[in-house]
Length: 521
Image (tube, rainbow, N blue to C red):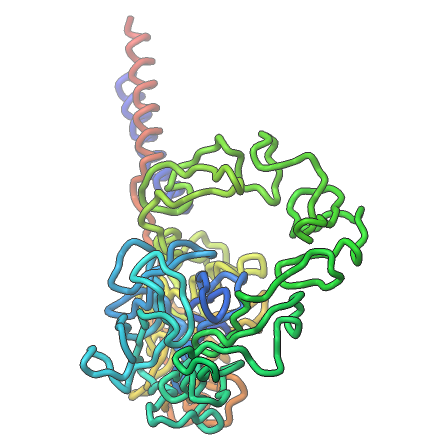
């Protein structure tokens, strides 16, 4: 009888193990789609990823090519634009280097050349557009146009805006000094689109092509004094000779206050970091917080601190595959991840992606179309994760036209895109282009329920132009509204046996055997 009871108990434990294994496994560009990355200024800049919002210079697909981008940022083929050393305030490297995390976009093909992007001898041509230029092959600052020697040239499914005909045509083509420096030439004696000044010959020294701007000096830019020059690339001023004098009654660049103009004693704001009252330094003309708190005082103050000097964490805790420990920078009290390698993408970090059945049946499904990405991260509090999932297109097949109810053929481009004006902070949708630049989106008007004996369900979809366009959108049947058949959601088969279940099962089995052994004695 005891053996029978023991067998029953063991069977019960194994059942619990399997059940536990199942439970433990459920653990500004157009609509933001065209943004490839951002930089801090037009030249001598740092870079940041497309999802960051610290820098104002957006590098947008539509500014270089005659159409909208796909919004897909996964790396495939030769679509790597450059490498980036961090999320923001980052240095960059040319696409053939592999020291940094890759920045990729859509169906681009990119190369780094030391020359012009239309030079066929360098493996590029008139179907390429310059995106940015780098000062060096790695650990580099970045600039627009041809300012630096390493030029990132890319081609894609759309023709470049620059047609390399020697004419700076802004009105009909949108050519500027940034996207077409071959036609909008810096140094041609006139200010073309995208330029703020132009470089010419110094009248006193014709060999010197960086000269002062007549009738315009540093005081026009709120500096105290000095001559103003046109910077290389003609997209900004060279203020290296401009002078700043603290407490001259002029709030100059680099100053946040003037002692004679700004009273002391106000509360410190977020820019000063630590809480307290502030004073304007008569040496630097910048606000200083009088708090007694500082980086390294062993008091963790957040914000602005992320850590204290002796703190350490692992690279895995910061979403890297491996590396040495993450330490706390002794000057800034920010985490230093420079010794980590293999930054995980959003898709790699969070897969698999599932959503629960609306009737709370306990079933979990994998998203099979763009609109179902919205179900994985519902609500306004998860809009950022929803956008990354959508534009990263993390689930294979979710952006395939037929899975999204589009039954037409001969599409120029298609995929998942992000509508930042959608409900709850933004929504994912399926887009397509039958003709270059004529972007349309589809929305489900109605959906039939899935039947137990049928893998398909009937849907009605409506196609409409994106961005207020006037072109006609065919939903795949010759009309803007069509009826189509799509697959029913796929039930996720969660892992059958997890490590938590395994350890728990072994522990329970050990207790049972110890109990039986003790009773026999």
